[in-house]
Length: 301
Image (cartoon, rainbow, N blue to C red; front, top):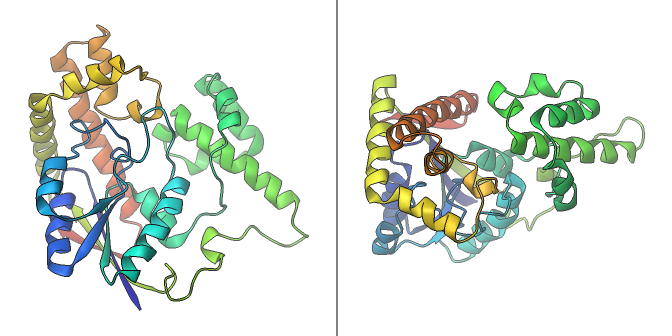
């Protein structure tokens, strides 16, 4: 039986340090499951401590695998992560997945309702639509879509576009199936039985803040540290490279607030306060989704 360890949980709980310490003790290699750290050039704001990682001597996979103007979905993560995990096993080491993007982990371990790659052609068309129009289009395909999404996702154009892709493909797939059949989950496909995610004894550890106060304090300190490290200059450099605020990589917490400041929409203090507030909200959403997974063994920090 192959072993797999997953370190997940709320933001600002020290997941990376925990995973690095574990990797040193267990001859492991890390696989990044942070949807922001898959992007190159996005280092300071995302907390990608390359110097610390290099100093540790531990190999880390799936950092800097996409440019900020590319989309990188949970589908992409699974496609990248599976062969990496199998390669680590073949070298008699322990793969350790670390990150707070629970959707990545969920789809890797449990599968998806349907195996849907991004549709770049469709995305170009959908990107021109307003949020209202995207909502209308999604409802025209799946009338119960709104009940399956939280308010934040329902008003997020990127999430709506992804839902439209999946819903569209689901309708097409179901239309091709005989009566009474259903779409099989991605986990049902056949794998090498020796090096298969299905043939896995995995342990999943979740780190969470012990209180709201500790959550706010940890995030506040971290945001101020990243500002001091040069987060604002990092954003300026990204814009100089030609990346836009509408690019997938920059549609994330921290970058959105600092870009608004650079555009004159708010002061740096206001941008920082909003960054902290959005990170706190994100951490709460993380735990809301993750606590439904009974396989996660929780630890307070």
